[in-house]
Every structure is written in structure tokens, then in C-alpha cells.
Image 1 (spheres, rainbow, N blue to C red):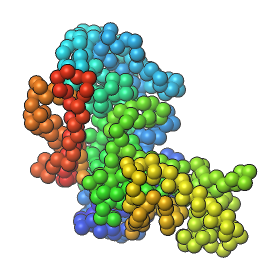
Image 2: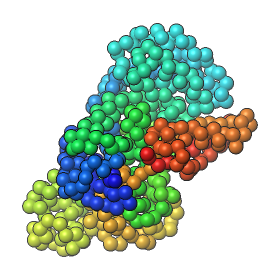
Image 3: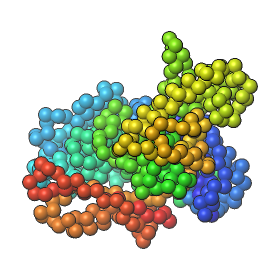
Image 4: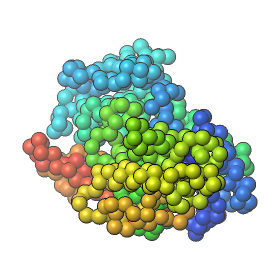
Length: 516
């Protein structure tokens, strides 16, 4: 039995094959193509050909992809979204799409409506839902929207109105019409939750193309019966159907794949991880084997959101970063030769000085032709290395929660540029097979379910609230493809809400389980 893991990075698309004991059978790196799809197909074809395994024994295939992130950043291939906010007239002072980039609003067509509905902060009714109002709106929007985001005021406390509107939409437009409910996506905070829900709704076409493209690529290679999963940004997996409901959860899955892969390769559950790619370096923290989540609102494509995101710092430093001297000052990146490194870097016969050239000149790496970089002054190369160290040290300091030195696991194809010692690091581990840690992380991941809601402990006991949240998290995990009998609780987070007079608490529960 074999598993295939593929992870699409900014520079390379990595593909690996693991056996049933999670031993690495073979791995390849292929340049990421502009259309993403070609790079995935090439990496898959190459790893299968070189591994020469029995394709009928491939049981699972996992994909970590940047396509949803790219679609938002590039404003391309997004669906026309209609936004229904349940909260008129109370929320009319701040309209949907407020503070959004103009080009993004134009790409989504900017359709929105404020209708009656919503709840107060204590769960009391703010406004009754008017079915006829919703149906009239849907008649008006016929052919104007391709996806709808439903956002209710304080739906994080009570979401029955959002779910009722979802039913009405699918009654009118059909069961297959994509609807995103904010209570299932974001956290407390109307505008940020609304923004995340709109983005999720906008990605419905991108995720459909991505999933069908991956399945087609597998079938082209004779892999027809494998279970197919996409990577989530918490270091776990989700089924194709679940991914179609929540495509936004694929955003930032690349760094979390690397963090999970680093944990597995180094056999460490609590540490800091540095993933060095061709263009950027990502730094994250492992807590009990999973990436630490961000506790603050995160901007995606210049849009402020509050859905679940990993706590990651990205630095414009990678193996292909361009090295320059401006007015006597050394600068590194943030631009990179990227996937063209094998043509443009000096060690490969190119004409652009990169960090990889510096690493080869100083004997840190053995790639390309070292004779092509012998002309680089050694003192200058050492000064560049000091600058590389400085960039890494600053990023590590931002991720620390204390002044103590940290343990650092280093992975990624660009890890050859990392110096042997870094200030603030007590122990540095360069994991074996770390160059494909991202694809390994994709293939060894479990399936998760998460549920978050505000509970009022004075009305419902803490024990009953925890039980309810866990049951709903388990339901999410099963929907994502987990086997119910294997699901276990891994995280409970409780945040008391100081402004609420009745002991209200934001409760977040996470569970994980094994795939079929």
C-alpha cells in the first residue's frame, strides 16, 4: 500500500511516495508552472516513473496547493458573490465590502443586501427572519451571482437563521449552488467574519477546478481508486467534498505541511521550524505536533479576516534570493530567480548572484559547479552570510514568547543557505529528507474537525457546552473524511468574554482522526 503526497510551492512542486510504514520510497522536485496544473502533472508523472511501484496499490493521494491563495492575491478566477447580511437596520452604518481593495470588489461584482434578522450579543432576537424578503432578493439576483455568503449578526452564538437562509437559497437555486455560512467559517467579529465568508464563497470555482484537475491527473497516470484529500492550513487533511464547502481552509497550507513534516522527520512535537524555499522562508511553531494558530486577525489579499490561520512569519529569503550591493550595502531579496534558479544562478551557468551561490562559495552546499563561483571574494561571501543570519534571527525573535534560546528544525529545498549557527538558537536540527518535508507533511496528516461558538455557562453548564462543541467538531471531522471510531480530542480553548454579563465564553474545540 502506498500514499502519494504533492505540495505546490512558489518555486518547486514536490511529490513523494510513502509505503504503509510511512517510509519514504521516492521523492522528486519539479519547477512550479505558471498554471500550477502542469507542474503537478509533471511531478506526479516523474515520481511514479522513477519509483516504479505497482500503481494499483496506491490507496491515498494528498495535495497541498497555493491555487486559492493565488486566486485572491491575483484577483483571478473568482466567482461573482452575493452577500446577504442578516442585521438590518442595526448594521447599516458599516456596509459589506467596507475597506476592501476596489479591484477585488469589482472582481466579485460587489452584490450585497442587508435584510432583517440577526441576534443580540446575549442570544436574544435582534430581528426576525423574513422568508419573503429573502426570496424576493434571490429572484433579483438570478444570473447575477455564482455563489452567496450568508452573514448573521452574532451567529457565533446562534446560527439557525443562517442555516435557514442557506436552505432557502438552495431551494430556489438548486442544492448544488454554493452557499457559505459565516458561523461555520469565522470567529467573533462581524466584519472580519463576513470578509472571510465572502472570500470562501469567491473560491468555489477555483477549488472545483483544482480538485477535478488533481483527480484527472491521477486518472491519467492510472490511479483511479485512491482516496483523494486536500491539505488544510492546520496541518490536517480534508476530503474533496469538504474542501468544496470550505476552500478558504487551504490558504497557508504549504507552511503547515512543512511544519508537520518537520515534526515527523525530527520526531519532535514542540519546537520552532524554519522552512526555507526558493523565494521565501516561513517560520512557525510546533505545539503538540501541530502548528500554532494565530490569535489575531489576519490579512489575506489585503482583506482583514478572522478565520483560522496558522501563526507564520514569512521572510523574503530563499535559495533563489538575489544578492545585490547598493551604495556599499548588501541586500538580499525579496525578489528571487524562483523556479528559474537552475538557469539563472551562477553555479548553474547563469548570470545572477543568488544566496545559493554564496552557500556553494563558502562550502555550505554542494550543488552546481563550484568553479563558477570561485571568483566571489570570500570576505564578501561571509558578509552576505551574516546578512542571511540577521534576517533569520529577526524573524525568530518575532516568533518567540520568551527571551530564551530556542530549538530550531530546518527543512525546505533552500535550507542549504542557512548558517551552522544562529544567535538565539540553542540547538539546530537539519532533518534528513527535509527538502521534501512539505510533501511528507501532506501525506502523513490526519483529518481534523473544529468547532467554535460562544456559550453562556450560566444558561448551559460548562460540561454540557464542552460536550456539545465536541460533538459538533466530531461531526465536522467525519464530514472531512475521518473514521468516527478513530477521532480523539486534541485541543480545547476557552476565552471568557469580559463584556458579557452572564459568564459567556468563546469555546473552540479541535479533534483529529484517521482517514479510511
